Length: 569
Ligand SMILES: Cc1cc2nc3c(=O)[nH]c(=O)nc-3n(C[C@H](O)[C@H](O)[C@H](O)COP(=O)(O)OP(=O)(O)OC[C@H]3O[C@@H](n4cnc5c(N)ncnc54)[C@H](O)[C@@H]3O)c2cc1C
Ligand SMILES: *[C@@H]1O[C@H](CO)[C@@H](O)[C@H](O)[C@H]1NC(C)=O
Ligand SMILES: *[C@@H]1O[C@H](CO)[C@@H](O)[C@H](O)[C@H]1NC(C)=O
Image (cartoon, rainbow, N blue to C red):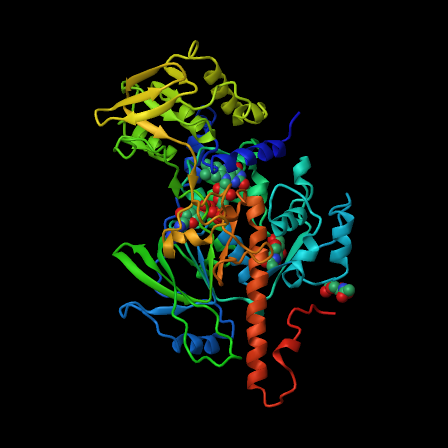
C-alpha cells in the first residue's frame, strides 16, 4: 500500500509541473459535513487590521540605522510617512508566518536523538558537538551537508529532517526541535499580505482536502492536531489524515494571534513597488551602508485605500507562486466568459449563472485543479466538455500516481477521463485536444489529433497552472531568475539565491523563500525561514559590533574580531 507521503512525493512532481495549481475537492464527501463546518467556522468578525502604524518590539538598534536612512536622498511622497524596518516581508502565507516567528526571537534548538534513532548519526554528531546552541547560530552549510530529499534547498532538508523525522517513509513522528524565546534577538519587521494571514490558503476552495497529511501543514511549535481539537471541536470521531483547506487556513490565521505575531502583520496590504534607493556618495569607507529598498503600496480599509511606505535594507519575497494563471496563448483568451480559477467557477455556480440548463462548460487541463472543477460541475449536474492535451492513458498524468484509497475523488475523475464519455452522462472528455480560438459568440474552435471542431459553450474554465508575479519589482523582477532570458517558473526558472542564506545572487538585500525558490510544499518552505533569519541576524550582529567598537573609547576590539556567532560555551 502506498503511503500518503508517496502521494505527496508524486504530487510534488505534479505540483512543480502544473505550478501547483490544484488540490482537492470532494464535494460529494464533504457536502454532508458542510453545515458542520459552516457552524464551526463562522468567519471571525474582525479579520482585517486597520492600524495606521505598526508598533513592534524595539531591537535597540533603531537609532543608528535611522541615521543612515536619513542621510540618503529619499524620493518619497510627502503625504505618506516613511517607516523604517530592519526587514519587510511581502506575502503572508505559511512561509512568511514562519519567518515572522523566527524573526520575533523564537529560535529552534535540537532536542536530541529520539528513541527510534532520528536524525541520522552524522547529523546528530554535528548537532551534539554544539549543545544548547540554536540552529540560528550554527553553520547551516556544515549541518546540512550530505542530506538528501525532495527539496533542492539544503536548509529546507535540514529543517524538515529535524521537524518531521523520516516523513518520506510514511512516519508521523514528533519534531526533534524545541523553541526558546529570545526577545533580545527580536528583529523589527513587518509582514505585508493581500488578505488575512494564510496567503494562498485563504483564497482556495475551503471544502477541498489537502494533498499532504494535515500534520505536515503545521508551523513551528503549534500542533495542528491539538489546535484542531480545541478550535474545531471534535469532529464526531472522523479523523482524516488529510486536512480540509478551510481548517488549514484558519490554523494559519489563528497561529499569528496565538503566537503573538499580530503586531508584525499588516493585512489587506498590497505591495505595488519595491525600488532601490539612491546610494549616498561620500560615505566613509568603514561605515556600514547597505543597499536600501523602498517598499510602497496600499492597505484596503473601510474608508478606502491608505498608502504606506517602508524603507529597509532587507526585503523578503514570500509571495508564493499562484498569482498569475498560465496562459494558453490563443485568441479570445481574455473574453469575459473565460475564467481561470476554481473559485470563480464556484461563484458562477452559486449565483446560478452556471447551472444544469447552461450550455456545456469547457474545462481545460488535466491536473488536480481541473479535476476539482470537474467534480464540482458534475455534482451540480452541469454539462462538461473536458479538453486536455495528453492521452487519458498517459502514465505521466497525476491521477494514476495517487493511491486510490487516499484520493478516491481523483480516481473517479480519472475513470471518467478514460471511459471516453460512455457511462457518465453530461461529461465528454476530449483527449489530445487543444483550443485553437475562442470566439466572442461563445463558440470555441478545438483541434484534436485527427479532427477539428467548433463547440458552443457557456464558460471556459482554464486550469493549467500558474506562476508568481514580480511586477512590483524593477524590470518586473526579470533580472532575478536563474536564467534571465526566460520568464520565472517555480519549477524551471526560480529566483537565483544563495543556498544557505536565500539572499538573491543578483540584488543584495532581496531574499526569497517558498515556491519562488522551488519549495512548493509547506513542509519544505519553512526551512527558508531559518536560513533567512540566520543571515539577517548575522548582518545585524555584525553591524552592532561595528557600532560598538566605533563608539567605544577603548580601541581594543576591531569589528572583525568580534565573534558574534559564538554560542554559549
Ligand atoms: C490548490 C492548491 C493546493 C495545495 N495543496 C498543498 C498541500 O496539500 N500541501 C502542501 O504542502 N502544499 C500545497 N500547496 C502548495 C502551498 O499552497 C504552498 O506550498 C504554500 O502555500 C506556499 O506558502 P507561501 O507562504 O510561500 O506562499 P502563499 O501561501 O502562496 O502566500 C503568498 C501570499 O502573498 C500574496 N502576495 C503576492 N504578491 C503580493 C503583493 N505584491 N503584495 C501583497 N501580497 C502579495 C499572495 O497573494 C499570497 O496570498 C497547494 C497549493 C495550491 C494552489
Ligand atoms: C544545556 O542546558 C541545560 C538546561 O539549561 C543544562 O542543564 C545543560 O547542562 C546544558 N548543557 C551544556 C553542555 O551546556
Ligand atoms: C512552545 O510550545 C510549548 C507547548 O505549547 C510552550 O509551553 C512553549 O512556551 C512554546 N515555546 C515558545 C518559545 O513559545
